[in-house]
Structures are given as C-alpha cells and as structure tokens.
Image (cartoon, rainbow over all chains, first blue to last red; front, side, top):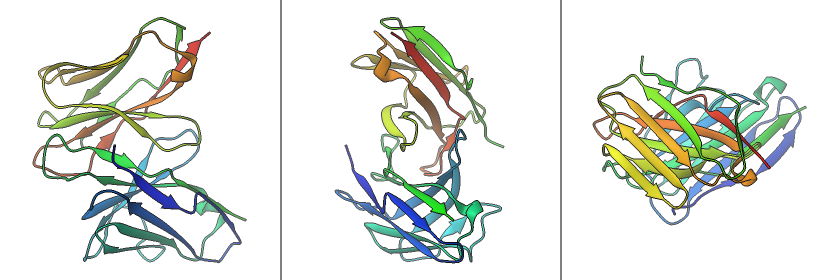
Length: 118
Length: 112
C-alpha cells in the first residue's frame, strides 16, 4: 500500500521552543494532507488540512499561529509547533489520500510523532 | 453534525472466535467507509475499505455495509491475540471530500 512517512518519530523539547514535524508521501503525490492529534486513550482529532500551494485550513479551536503548516510540494507537508508548552505534548499524526477524486481512494497515515514538552 | 458511533468496548473474545465490530453513521450521503486498526502508541493502519452495499472479504477480515440502515461492520474470523487493538471506523462524505469522520474506536481484546 501507499506509504506516508513522518520525521521525527519522537521528540522531547523544553517549554518555549519550536518543533518541526515533517510528513512525506513516499510513492504518490498528495495535494492535500491532514494533521491529527491524539491524546492518550482518546480518538483522533483533526487539527488542520494542509493544501499544497495554499494556506492550510484549521479546525475550530486550533490556533493557526501556534501550529504552523507549510505544504511546499506535492510530497511534503510540515507542522511546526511554535513556543511549545507541556499541554502540547501529544501524538501527532499526518495522513494523505492516494488520489482524492475517486470513491475507491484510501487514506494512509504516517507512523506518528510523539512530542513531549518538558 | 455528522457523527460516527462505535461502542468503545472493550470487546473480549476468545482466541479462534469471530469478533464483530459495529459502526453506525448519521450522514446518509456518505460515500466510503474505512476500518483502521490502531495498536497502543502507534498510528492507525488501514485494514479495509468498502463503498458498495454488501460484503467485502480480505483474508480473515470481512467488511459489511448496509447504507439503508447506515451501518457498517467488521468481522474478524479466527481471532488471534495479535488482533488485540483499537479498531477505528471512518466515514467519508460524498462529493469527493477528503475529510473523514472517525468513530471513537472499539477496543478488542482476544483472550488466549
């Protein structure tokens, strides 16, 4: 199946620093990628939709200035958590659709990035 | 608001039994339906997707879709301890829109 990679897989940082997470589609192009956050024992929460060549679309309650998204190419989207605080500690997961135009398309997830802010 | 409902479980089944996971959705115009398996601390892994009424089989897994009842299920035959995980149901709306709605997930425990 299609592969989506994320880097880094785990990051520990001090409060107030910024952390960048990369999401890549390895064998297909993705004009749209999605960023999710998942807290322990909770379901996935969609944070934003990353659009290649245009601004990201954020879900209600997600701070645009705190979670910066850049979708610079058809295979790469980045999420930057700015001025991270302990409450930002979570599991961040990106996803991409294989095509997005057919009912048979599927969504694949990256392996996730576990962020711990001290 | 579009909703996807799942029983959070845990659903416990003995090894070798059939595990039946259920999901209902509120948006009648939904286009396609996905089952993901998520192990603790890992990201979701696609198990199956279905978009036509009826059954779709892949190995030990069978997805069943009934659009009239707005119901989708996942059957796991010959359940193994390695199947113990949380199973997420995801529903995609019509119109080619890519933003799916996830259920809370059902935790499955296969008892050896």
